[in-house]
Amino acid sequence: MGQLLDNLRTQWDKNTNQMTAITEVAAGQNRDLNDVERANFEALKVEMDTLAPRISQLVEVERSTDATAALFASVEHTGRQQLERAQAPASLAHYKTPGDYLYDVFRAYGAGADVEARQRIQRAALVQRTSINGDTVADIGLDDLIGNVPEPIIGEVWSSVDAMRPTVASLLQRSLTAPLMFRPKVTQNTQVGPQGTAGKLGSSKTTGASVDEKKAFVSREMKLARVDIEPIAMGGVVDVSLWAEMLSPGTLDMIISDLADQYAIATEAYACAEVLRAGTASKITSIVLGPDTINEAIFAAAAKLYGLVGRMPSAVGVSVDAWAAIGGLSDASKRPLFPALAPSNANGTATANSWSQAVSGLPLVVSPGYADATVVVYAGNSIETFERRLGVLQAIEPERAGRVVSYSGLFDCVAMDDGAAVQIPYTTT
Image 1 (cartoon, helix red, strand yellow):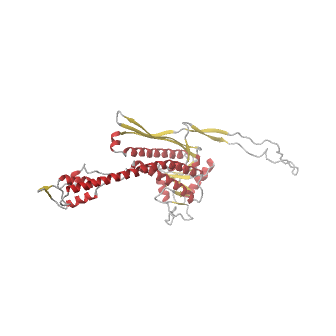
Image 2 (cartoon, one colour; image 1 turned 30 degrees about the horizontal axis):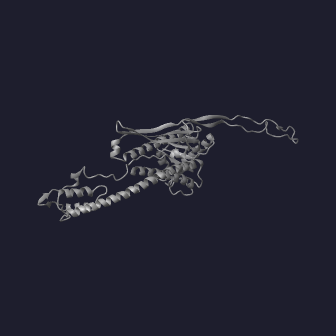
Image 3 (cartoon, one colour; image 1 turned 45 degrees about the horizontal axis):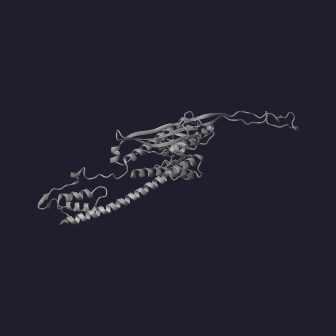
């Protein structure tokens, strides 16, 4: 139960950090949230609303469990005091029998250790040889009791997995309602132009003036095509021994949490691949990355993006190594090109302890889902993600004393227009 509460706390913190990052980017640019940011902010809020009652329930259970454990501990401590009075040792540094000594050892270490018992053992350790009823008692240390003294776990399982989905969060997010859906897309627009050849009405002032009154307007039909949304199922499955689960209750929560993290990593990589696919044919000329080229390249990519799809960019997607290269740029005087303090004349900000940064007015979306040396400018409102999580499924295998556990969901990412992203090829020398 403690591990599950920790998992929920971690998810709560992740959502809080993402919501803070969204608002900080908008505040740093002195503007309101755009449509993509507002949609992502609302999606995170809905998820947090579902987490809140689960966290509240587990916290209440934990409090009740702790209170009950405290009552048991007080009774157990009273029992030990009565036993010690009954034994009435002549000196706290001596024990009547080896059993009395072992009794204190078992209770002096591990979870819920008895501090008084440990102090008695420490005082007894000052006497190298202890005489009990005339016999010499051999010393016994922790090394002699390996396997009997408990080895408590002092923290949660450590994992270096980053399950954030920055690219997915920067795109327009929609829910899945059917196994196959489609978006209508205009492939040919209607047309508007002057009436007749010049659009001028009759005039008696000019000889030979064009008279277009009651001439036909230009006409062109609107044509539509469909963009198919075909989600793929992503998931993972493991077979857990019920014996392992019984002897280590936190095992199942740990495995489910890891499956959910791996699902996040897989869907983030899928979204990054679609962003790059949308920009495969729309690249600007390769640049040598430097303080005099990066800003010019981003604006050139933004202009090309608008020319292709008629939309302004919403973010710059970069790989981790590209983030490091851009953030480390400095001018001829060795001053940071994107300083952390964000002076009024800076083109952006950068810090080494956060992905939440801005370059040339666009938020920097840093994702390990991108291959090295990736810089891509894209319009997040022209690239959409569709997702519906199935979550955790379990089935007991009585013939094998096992539990099959899976975590899965349906996911798709689709660029409405090829050209919704523009890549910036670069070299560092």
